[in-house]
Each structure stands twice: as structure tokens, then as C-alpha cells.
Image 1 (tube, rainbow, N blue to C red):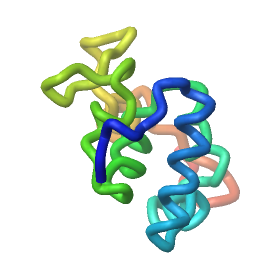
Image 2: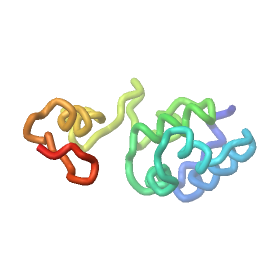
Image 3: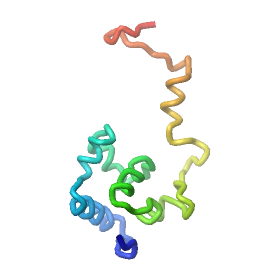
Length: 112
């Protein structure tokens, strides 16, 4: 796919992305189901940086993520983040390994 045809206007680019996904026989809804996220979670990419979902969409289109969202990614393929020292998966890892986040729930039988 020619990256020169990717619109620079974010609103037009979003419509272009949806069109290209349909042309490849998939959709945002299918990608969301494959990634086990909600449709709105995937659509958040339209208005806010979401590196994980941006990679999913770019992979489905067969385009480098930095070519699809040049304002959100640098040339080396790393996201331009507001908090650069915070890894993408930090919150899940912190909850998994942090004794302070060991919260149980009475309905699931994991009370502490």
C-alpha cells in the first residue's frame, strides 16, 4: 500500500482507515473482538493516543504504525508519549505484583 495516499487530516484519515479495513475484509468491530476489547476502546484511537490499538490497526492494514500516525510515533517506531518513562503495561503489572493491590471481592470468593 502506498503511504503517500494516507490523508494528513486526522478526520479524513480515520475514514480512510475504516475504508481500508473494509477493503481488506475486516472492520474495527472484528479487530476489537480479536483483541478482547470493546468497540469503543478501539475507537478511542480516533481521538487519543492508544499505542496498543494503533499497532493492531496498523498491522491489520499492513502499514507501519509511524506512517499511519506520524504525529503520535517517531521514526524509530516508538510512541511519542506524554509520560515517556511509564511503560504501556505498567498498570496491569503493578496490580499483578503489588501486595497493596491485592483486592478480593466477596462475590468471587477471593475475600482477604
